[in-house]
Amino acid sequence: MEHGGGRRALLAAVARHHAWATDRADPVRSVLGSQYGAIPSSDWHWLLLSGPYSQTPFETLGNAGVGAALIGLCLLACRSRRTTALLNPFAVLGTMALSVYTLHALALATFASGARGWGPLLWFSAVSVAGCWAWQRCFAGTALRYGPLESGLRALTRTTTTATAPGRTTTPSAGTATETTVRPGPPPAP
Image 1 (cartoon, one colour):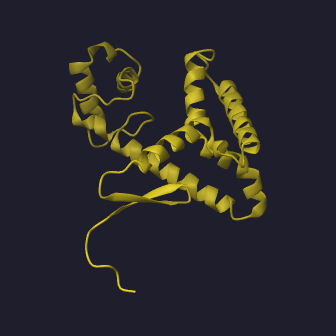
Image 2 (spheres, one colour; image 1 turned 90 degrees about the vertical axis):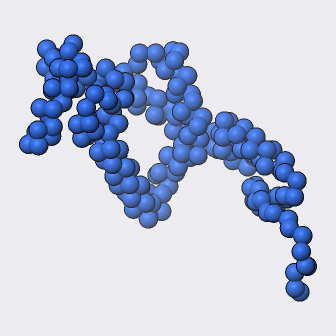
Image 3 (cartoon, one colour; image 1 turned 60 degrees about the vertical axis):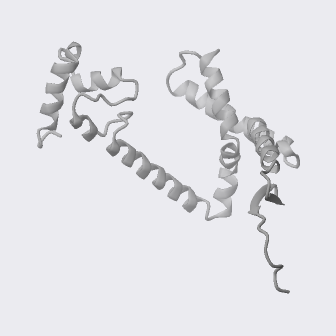
């Protein structure tokens, strides 16, 4: 951006389309901060940024790389039984991601509104891991073992997959439904 003239082009776009930000310490960052996760469409040079929450191709590529590296690290960590046992509560948390995400959104919309910083994040993380671990322990042998919202969604999808269109059948296999088409024709050879 600096050597290819991209920063200069962005500052010109800020001056033309976002004049309110020209007197800020960093006009480009000010404009991005006011976009709520969207990229301004005033100049194609905005796509060359890679800053956090810029929603550009380079930021997305960087996030994918970090995600792949974390998955790789987790797979390496789980090669020993000791680390697998230590990481098991986080695996249980992963099976209840929809419930945890929903509770997090509800908490931020109600009693934790305006919570910022590491303290609230660590508190919510610890409560989430402990709550999911306790839920899994209490409901391990039941249909609710996946979490409340996950179990409800699972039951709903299982109900809708049993209702099939004419000419189709379902074959249940370990809690899932597989669709096959019934076609008239000669019987299969023995």
